[in-house]
Image (cartoon, rainbow, N blue to C red):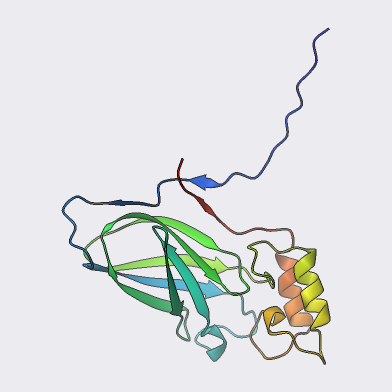
Length: 175
């Protein structure tokens, strides 16, 4: 008798080189005009709650940016090439886009940043719920104020619940 193998499925990471600059590119000759959508059901853009810090990783280099009231940001001085670009907010899941940046301005939409990652580990889990519970009104925990209204309440819980057991995108390099 032969044993029947058991198949176990695991999440798959996106594997790609972090950057492939073009051979004739001049350093610093392009910019990224990025945009994100934020989960703010009761506060659509433009709104002051959309002004948030983001970490944007381009070819292994991290940039700290802040969005405007409509979710837009700009990074200048980039080298044209093909990149995996990862965007993450303080309590959102990361979104990844693979794109080719050319000389001049490059507009790239990174989609909706899903809320609920209070501990910033790129997954929405029971640990994030615990942070939300400890900061629930009348207490306050900024990491769990997912809708940026200065309260931790049912609106924040609804965002966490919507994205519970979800993880953000990642980039695996070196393969």
